[in-house]
Length: 471
Image (cartoon, rainbow, N blue to C red; front, side):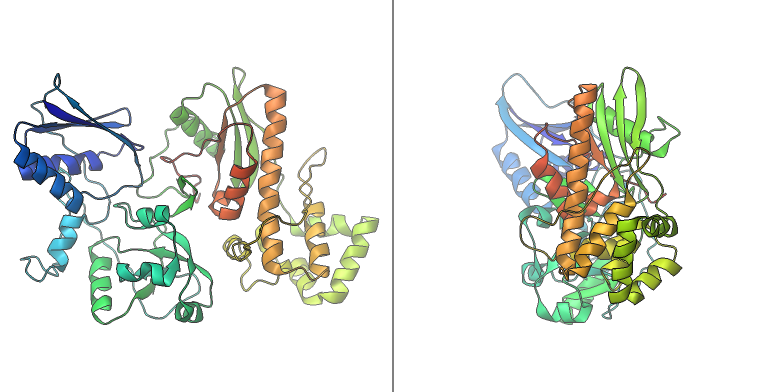
């Protein structure tokens, strides 16, 4: 008689199966682990109940959580026995596991405060050395990420959901944007929302331990670009950029957008699909069918000077510009004299502290109501109508609409535009599979809006591949 667990694991990485093998080795129970086609199969012999109990206890204490974990099915089966094999895993750039952290932080441990600890607890024959030169500081700089030094203070410092807690303390240790609850932290940072990360390697764990002993709950640091950042909306968890834990893309197309789409399409096992790429680098819509894979709609490049010139040459919009200049001369001067992308231009109109996508995204999160303003998101015969979009935003700015409400409405409008366009493409091409990606989905307002409006079918967001790249 054996107990059999089928564990869904939404990544080809082998470390989680390796942790299970290590627990088998530690308990000396007769068992085996296999990993194939996204499923881990754990088989444990039930003939020695004491070893089964020991395995269960050690699993609860030392088996880490992973953001890639899915459903787990457990059955007793008389016809199956553990195989005489040992699972091995390559080395991965993951965080220290619970065993490592116990060795590091327990004063009774022979490796207490040993900064040379490397994880050897997922049946890995190789070791990875993390050369991290990050500087952690009690002083906040504008783009810093928070290092959570005292995990027990998490819910006192931030508003956080159960799924966000699981992601934050997973073995992958991604950073997440959380809402600040603590008034002192709001005052220190000048923010209501901020990226948060729990200790992710030995160095940061030691720094956090030292800070906690000094009754310091948080430190600040400039996060490495390679570190994973995720967005958590409802039951969806998606990585934003290619990083140390996302699966690397196969080379399926020379076009970077189509290549990411094709990799996700292969992951989803769709023979045909419609895609929406909502990226800061450019927005496009993709159709893949028997005729091939193509970007059928593509936003044109945004040129702020061309946009303002076109508005000036339009009778109605030229009057809007005149009114806007009369009330906000400094804003219009910025628009006329600086090279800005679309999100920088919108940030300038809203008079945000920083002109960036991140600043606009954070501002949108401040609105807690339902239903935004109508922002024009139209297409001309040749391209996306940036003039109409900026014109509507300027009009609302002239009407003294709160900046956070306007920012919220802008991301809602992006979501509505995406769903409407996908609906039209569905009708034209008769395809029911939808793939969504791009780093604009890092904004929770947009992500939630798309999910609420997507009555066509369930959209597919990759959990294995990052939604975008920094290239």
